[in-house]
Amino acid sequence: MAIIKCPECGHQISDKAPTCPNCGVEIAGKVRKCANCGNVYFNDEELCPICHAPNPSRISGQDQMQTVPPPIPTTTQYQITKQPKTKKSRAPYIISFVIALIICAVCFYFYQKANSDKEQQEYSFALRSNDPLVLQTYLDNFLTAPQEHRDSIQSHLQAIKQADIDWTNAIVSNSIAALEDYLRTHPNTNHRIEALHKIDSLDWVQTSNINTPEGYQDYLAKHADGEHATEAQQLFDKMNASKVNDEDKQMIAALFKHYFQSINSRDENGLISTVANILTSFLGKENATKNDVIGFLHKIYKEGIANMNFRLNNDFKIDKKEVGVDEYEFSVSFSADQTVNKEDGKKELNTYKIKATVSPEGKISGMNMNKIVAEPKKE
Image (cartoon, rainbow, N blue to C red; front, side, top):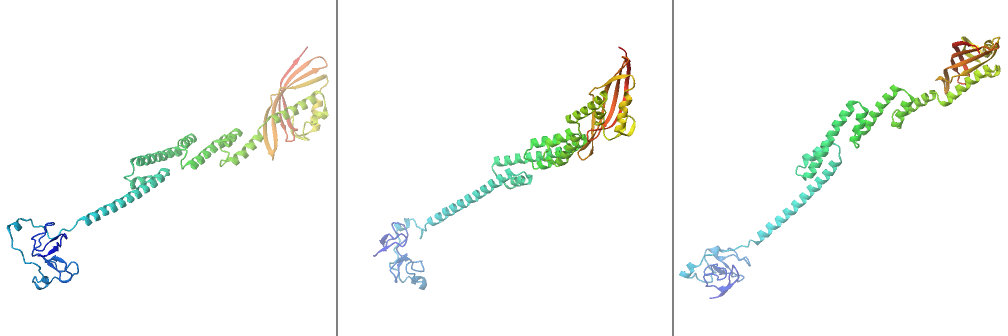
């Protein structure tokens, strides 16, 4: 009897023991000792597991190296449960499986994180965009995005679609009020420049139709940098210059006051200083001269007239017309009352309707007088 190591578990046992008391594997008649290295291994192995020397019994079919004869079976041996020849450990498989799970989990985490980062980037981009195609692309590509993100983009998309409807209605209406209301409702619209251009054009059409200095002034107040601002300013300046101002009124009033005061005082020099060298028309005579004006003064002071007095009623109606570059001619109509005191004590009252033209030089260049009332009066 020899002491050997169990080939299965390494426990020291007798080579004649029916089984290993530690692991239960069969020993007697089932093992052999390697002639090369002395290692004990099972008879059914082709090679020594230590030195890999061939098993002679596997080669020749005879168990030449069997160290012990097969034991006589006993009742006790048959009652022992037969154990498997080998018990291979499952630990490596379990470890490999766990590592594989960890790797999968890490890969899934980074995959999910990458998708989440991409979704966040696309969400931010879509939220800033006013292009319906960009928003719809986000909704189509990120069906599993957070619901609050999808709701936000849906709301934004709906607002853009409504804005497009509002823009179509505003532009079709061809109304300044509708376009201005659209800009107030949608201050960040992509159509802002187009809307302002349309408003400017509509305002200009209205202003041109009115064609007054006030209209052009109002256009400039609304559209200081408008497309028609230069033209509006030129027309305003021209029309404003043609508009009778206070200075013009004062000049006209002073001119005719001087003219009639010169008649009242029989001042020939004062009278001709108020008229042009050539008058287009004077009391029915065309191309009249200053001598014709003096002749009129002598004519109205008939024999028997002690004195006369013209008093202006200051009911001037004045039109101003441009006749040259920064040169303006005035058409004037007004009335004047005449009181004639005669040497016999009689008094005559007359009212004249006067129409006159004033040259750019501020001289009377035409005049006609029509008597309206002639009423003799005694004192």
